Length: 113
Length: 116
Image (cartoon, rainbow over all chains, first blue to last red; front, side, top):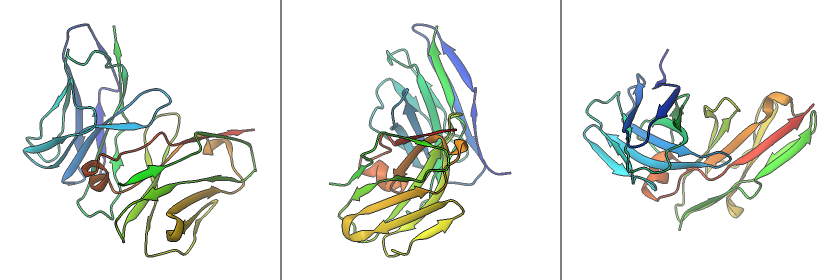
């Protein structure tokens, strides 16, 4: 079955450490997105990519980095510069027409040790 | 400027009551799509329905129904005879690329709590 796979489901980060969240899709979607969700809050866009080797900053890109070397993969690195990384991270993908919705992964919960 | 507003932050009902969620989408675009997503306590977002601005017919799918009024930019969602499994956060959102390009992504959504 086609879908989006995020891993790991739970992740713990030590102070000063970079961690990478994985997002893989086999839907053949061109566009991919990373969102952050804090408890009781909505989703805020971190980065998005409309095509391989290209990506744009969203609303809260500081302290995060991404790459899009393959169509099916869009990993997110939470760097040590992100001082409050504890949150729920959701990856999504979509195909270009504006008539199409996003498909979401199951999310990764990141906590600070 | 484009803006999505879900004014209700939380709605609490008793099982079998109907519940209506409001969404207002302000945009300069003359034609557009809107989407509703459901986020259950487990966390993943599930796509529920897509509606376009040139179709104002109500749509019904089981216990879910949607009413779209272009004149007021309102795209409302009703759950009839609510069940405990309907407890979730519901988000109204424009197309993802449109949202991202306009710095307009998901708002806080509306949390629905259905009590037995």
